[in-house]
Every structure is written in structure tokens, then in C-alpha cells.
Length: 158
Image 1 (tube, rainbow, N blue to C red):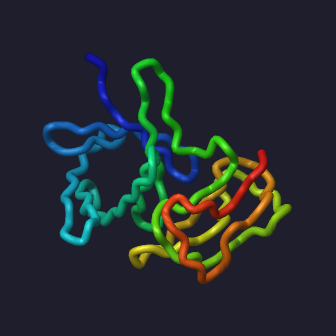
Image 2 (cartoon, rainbow, N blue to C red):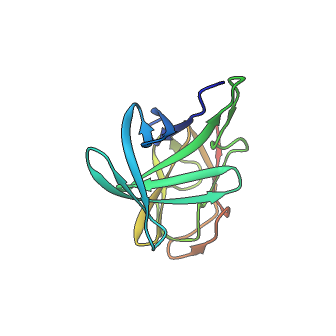
């Protein structure tokens, strides 16, 4: 039987192997215990204790920990991936949130990992980062606006 695991890709593009075990969750071979909290967050206990939030929209799962945003993709036994990255060049809101800051304008050149928009949800700032190098085609949100999960925020051209 294959070894079922999930790959966690952070904003810097680093990939971490996550696997459920009988003792908890293993992240890059380090054991982390996850405890669901009444407010919907998850307390992660390992070398340190951290509070995490998650949001799901379609096939994409975002996890927010210590101001960092991670996306999940599933590694298929065939080696194919279901990517959380954008295939059509637009970036969408992961959950209902308020736009706190728009850092780019149409025509701006961006690099992988650049912060394009900062959202606020559940008392946390959520940076929306460029998934790769490109040019901003359109900005479809403005500061102070309430956006819904899946709403397009930025359109990029590679």
C-alpha cells in the first residue's frame, strides 16, 4: 500500500511532507498534535505551540499559522498533483475577508512571493502572494472592501 501524505507548500515555495499517524500529525518527520478548538481554530503542539486557522474553497485548502499562509496539494500515487496554484492567472480570496491593503497596480511587475494584497479575517492578516513572476493585469478589489471566498482579487500574466 502506498504512503498517503499531503504536501504543504509555503509562500516561499518550500514543500513540507505532512502525514497523519496514530500519534498525531507528522510534519517533515516531526510529530505535531492537533487539537480542535471551540472557535474553529486548531492548536498545534510540537516543539512549540501555535494556533492555526484553515479555509477551504473548492479543491484549495489554506492554512494560516503565525501570519504565514500555506496551501495544500495532494500528491497522487501516479505522481500527478492537484495544485492549489492558479491555472488561469487570477488570485482569489480564500475566505470572506476585508481588504486591508492593495500593494500593486495594473502593469506592475511582481516576483514569486511578493505580497499583492493583504486581507484581514478572523483578526488575522492574510497576505496574498504572487504564485510566480509576472505582470499585474487587473486589480479587482480596493482597500476597505469586504470580499467573499473565491472572489477574484488580482489577475496576473506570466
